[in-house]
Image 1 (cartoon, rainbow, N blue to C red):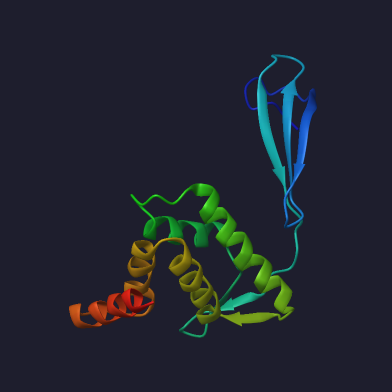
Image 2: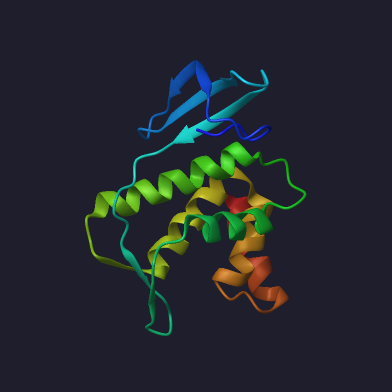
Length: 149
């Protein structure tokens, strides 16, 4: 592992932690410049192809999903760790399905469910686009459904 500060390849592991999804986070110290930095490792498991609305297929893109969720959570009290956890849960659920292809609707439904529990404003923002809520009446109905629960 190269030091991000001085590019030396000599570093030592100071601390190691494991997460529930099988990932590893290591705290390292460069033996050349003394700076500390963190690295993370996660297992590479097969994720299914995503079948989009128009019938095209594309690889599951974790970063694309994170970007979409971050847009919904902009200026909301949702931490990057919460977003990463949600995306990790979605990715793990897709891998656990064991299918070669999954509809984008399945992924969208998982995001909607996760955001609904995480932050209701972010949920509404995502739902406006995902569910196609294109008038105030439809948005109001969705808000009313949220308020009933």
